Amino acid sequence: MSSTEPERLQKVLAHAGLGSRRAVEDLIRAGRIKVNGKRAELGQRVDPDADEVSVDGTLYPLKADLAYYLLNKPEGVVSTSDDPEGRTTVLDLVDVTTRVWPVGRLDRDTEGAILLTNDGELTQRISHPKYGFPKTYLAEMQGVVGKPVVNRLAKGVELEDGRTAPAVVKVLGRAPGSTLVELTIKEGRNRQVRRMGEAVGHPVIRLVRSSLGPLSLGRLKPGSFRRLGTAEIRALYRVVDL
View 1 (cartoon, helix red, strand yellow):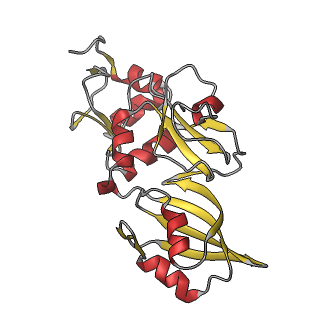
View 2: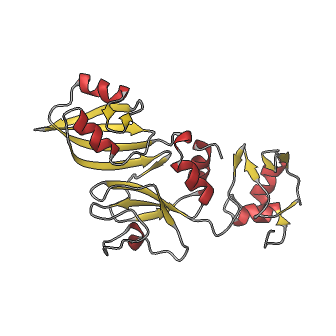
View 3: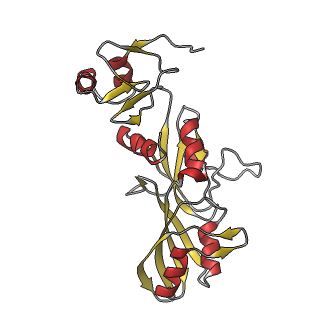
């Protein structure tokens, strides 16, 4: 049973960050909001714990205590909630009062984007192979990575746990002794990009995850984090069909 009292829809959505009450009312009048699959009405009451509200066809999170953060994980930090060896974890870098957890993992020696949230359903969908959540990496690889190697990486390479799925691969630049390659994959195998580099004869020297689905690091510095905006949360929901 729900522990909350039903409240007016425009108040709930305004509190959840969709916009001002007047802006929400305009969306309701335009028919862009649905409650449990039916067109919403002005003054309608909803239970944030029990009702599903969608905006333009995308489920909208109602609970005020849901939190979403993007962290740029530095090298040497472990992407777990706690570490028995006493190493620095991603949660040590995020000074927030709401309990959150990391979605997926980055190797200790890999840098970049990691999502921290307490949204269980979103976590489950991002982590489930069924939804093919895309992740983009910038990999500095040893040697000159030419077109034949790019094609191999893109089509999939054989690893000890099976062939990798097709990937989007681009060469971004070259330096003496190395090549900067961008790879977008939709799998979450352990150390996958590094193992792909080894498999094609170009070990990864440095690896940074630059984006998670619609979320990009942008100018976020290593060790820094930011709270996601409403549009970014909705974009995440769309990617995993919520």
